[in-house]
Each structure stands twice: as C-alpha cells, then as structure tokens.
Image 1 (cartoon, one colour):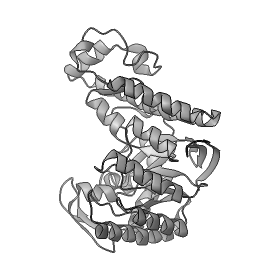
Image 2: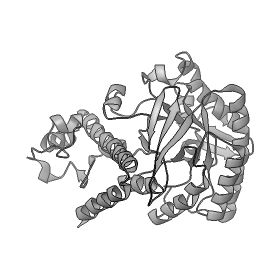
Image 3: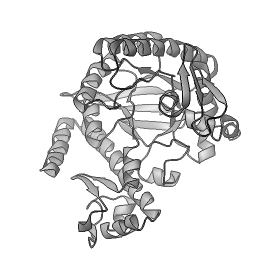
Length: 373
C-alpha cells in the first residue's frame, strides 16, 4: 500500500512537498516520472535513469499487454525484474492508448473492445477488471483505474457521459483491486473542460476512496490557460492527505505552475521525445542543437549543469552527431533533458521545504521571459 506524508505547504501558493512510500522505495514529491512505455525509457539504461535522479518511472498497460504479454512478464515476477529497475513503477490503465491507437475500438459499459494497432488481428477486450489484472501481473507500485478518454473539444453531454462511465468503472476497479492486490490504485478525475463535471467526478471518486488521485483529460489540445484553469479548479477538490497526479503534463513551465497549484506527480514524453528531435532544455530556455551557430561551440548544452552529457560533451559534438544521424545523440540528449526535468522538480521541492517557493517560481519565469526577448 502506498502511504503519502505531507511535509510542508507553501504559504503563498498551493505548492506542497511530501513523501510517497511504496514497496520499492520512498518517492520525494513533487516528482516527474520519465515515460517508459515499452518497459524502457527510450535511449537510456536503468543505471542512467538512476544517475539523473529518476525515483519512479511510468509503464504502459496497453502496450505491455500486447507485447510481450503479461504471461512473459509474469515469469519474472513483474516489470521490475523484467526491465532491471528496482525503484517504483506506475502503470497507466491503457484507456488512452486504446482511444488513440487501437484499430476499430468500441466502447461499452463492459469496457473497450479493440483490435491491436500492431497487427489489426484478433479482437481484445479491456475491462476495468482486466486493466487491474494486467497491472497486477506487471506488479506496478501504483496502478491506474480504467477511464474513458475524450478528445478536445467535446460537448458537455459527451464529457458528462464519459465522466459518469469513468466513475462506474472506478467502482469496479476498486472491487477487483481490494480483492487481489496490495499495491496502490489511483482514481482518475474526468469531466472535460467543464468545472461542474470535474467537481462531480472528483467528489464521486473521493467518496469511493483511493490511496491517490489523478487529474486526467488535460494537455489534450486545449489552450494552456484553460488547462491551468481546470487544474486550479480540480486539484483543491482532492484530499490533502493523498498524492495528486496530473497526467501527461508537460513543459517545464507547466510543471512549475502545476506545482504551484498543488500537484505532486507528473509524466510526459516531452523531455525524451524532444531530445530525439534535437531540442534541449536549459535554465535559459530551449536550445535546438541543429542550429548552425553550434557548429564550433565548445560549450556544453548548459554551462553549470552536472549531468553526464554536459560534463563530457560540447554542443559542437552533439550537433555533429545529430546531423550525422548517429544513435549516440539520442542517449546523450535524453540524459540531459531528463536531468533538467528532475533537477527542476527537486529544486522546487527544496524551495517549498525552505519556504521560498514563490521566489523560485518568479525567478524561473523571469529566466523564461528573458529567453523569449
């Protein structure tokens, strides 16, 4: 069972620092979770993840259920031994991937019926019960309830129906979880971009009762102002003594603002995906390594950064690797970007504990504004 201890809350914002205890270690929050969709964070090893400060990573139920399958992973006792990662793992339920990837998917009260995006062959059925069963086989420390994902924009009736179905599925997930699994299960708040629906969704999930709660359905194409508005409305509705996870977010600025709103946990493919596309994050803003001005640049990606890449390699070398399409650049750029994200949330946590988060937040935005001028 996951246990959350709130350590300190900012006096001027809703930012908070805490400890999240799992079977595979204690997580210091706020925390960013690198995305390891296929039982690997792309381009880096578990040892490199530890070196950049990763405390927990995310795996994907849909992808791992289809390949290599829970029977194979079950022979290893779960994902940890299978992928050589001995720290905590969170797995999502697979609902978003069925929604976005699967061929000929159909939703009903029972669950999602779909054909695999890998071969379009046999039909599969993902129900609230089977989503919990798969995650139990993966032995993830934190599991997610199956929810219904909707596109943006969505009509109110569509958002209401999806939120209601998500609540009914959450009840079924909890029944399956309570009967079989010692690890944690999080409920997911839905409701689209409608505050009253998110209020109802949050209240219903809290009434069911979960060790933690997630805010879903954000960062799906809506304007950033609307995303922050929905998060600001939803997060205070969730219990203060439970971890709060905002799914699929986001940019460094998004993380800082979500922390200020009271969020504890985040995941996003941005630091890894952008690294493979040559975009690197620094305290002064983003850097595109393919730009000609880096051709003879002897500086590291970010002067003063102590990640492995910045301690050993220049911008000129990374640009050469990127233009030559050498695989090594993916690894080196990913190491830096993950280090940057994890350093950012660590600095935010320290600022909360020391009572100066608002100063930290203002300084961060001042640097970003300077970069844009």
